[in-house]
Length: 427
Image (spheres, rainbow, N blue to C red):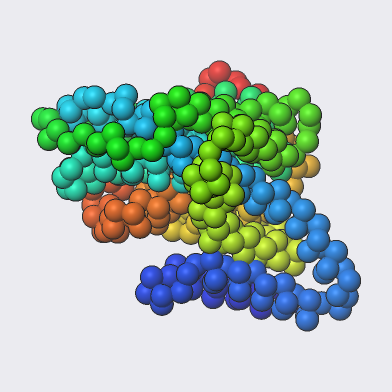
């Protein structure tokens, strides 16, 4: 029984990895993998009612993650509809490559902690297209954006899907994840940032400024929705701390408040113009295939968990690797090949909270490694895949030019986390 479900998952994942070669969207492969895995489980099982109960139990956790993602994506689209990100673009004036690299690196790092690494990458790719005309020069900056987005997402409960999964599941809490992962994540950024600084020289060609007519919103509206949107996202962990309700409830509250704000600001406009800035328009622009991809993957992983396969895998890793640091580092490196979402979902299924309670060393180190390990290959993270698709970055170019620096940053941050735990005795 377990072998059949495992085989379905492996075959489905091969289809996901070969998305471009077989011209089949990975969301479709993920959904089919998830549904077929549960169908196989229920056919093999002796009691369909128990299987259904297990599925409904898993669906409660999965739906919380999906509603959270949909709310965050909608808020970001609403900011973009009001040209809110022009606030950032207009603030960057330098043409010096090294200075711009540091600005982009730190901007991405902190923005990712608020908006999530996928959204931040999309924003930064758009920003770099406006700042750097030469594509060859822009590529190095793109590589730095991928590293910075993943590093920035690792230390924030809303910065990376995997960290969000651990936060929603109760494995980590907001204060501890920020306190204990900020410095390791920063080091994982600084190491490649310093290396690229030694490579880059000179100034960039000045980009022609965009005409004012291309921006349809007023300066007041741009600033209002940028700062309101970022503030709404930052309020989500505060809402959870105050109410103890699931994080998606805080995200829905923030979305509702921004919806109300947009209705008030545009109440005097005609319906056609008002629709351009509405939440309904933003909802139509969110990346639903990504949401469905996560749904399929999480359903498939829950099938593996329900069959007991993940527990057996945990026992195998404990017996053959043993050392907790090596186990987590291996998961992080594996996330460069296999998407970090199913890996973390698998880890949550493999290790219960009786063995490793909330804010345990294991969960925090897992959040760091799964969040930053994917930077070593361009296909290893949502940020990398997004940049690859938008800028047509070649896999082997990234492997030659970026991977080594990302790997050095990954191990440097891991060493800092371990030393931080041993020397400062963070508990």
